[in-house]
Length: 177
Image (cartoon, rainbow, N blue to C red; front, side, top):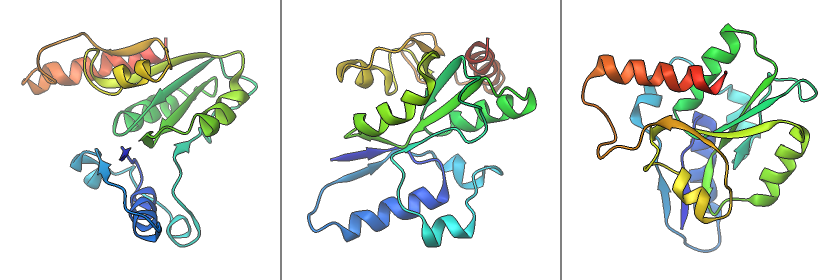
């Protein structure tokens, strides 16, 4: 099966198009939240839709590879919170790499992207608590990156928007420390 958490409209279009174009059938599970449908930064240029293809891993286009000291690997909606902080603080020493297709994960593509950042620290960032989300899956397939997330909990969210916002801001702050 293919498990994805796409973060751009073009990538959503291309993953569904790829699904139909394949000469075989394989289940496709897309875990993207519907809040990305109305996120103001979640847009794709028309050219990405007409000339692009599905990107399993999306590298950072803002950070300068030679300056990068920290690489934040993430998936889905948390990318836009990290991007906002990176752009606001003009942090070209922190790269944000998105894993759009989680299973099967293309380690070859991932290694090619991470080869640009040989001296950088790698961190997995997720908004889910530590005992939930994709981090445990990444551990099982041999990618043992330190995690930046909420504390382990029995529930994926607090239920209080104010506390959720504070926790989200804390995750973003720790990612850029």
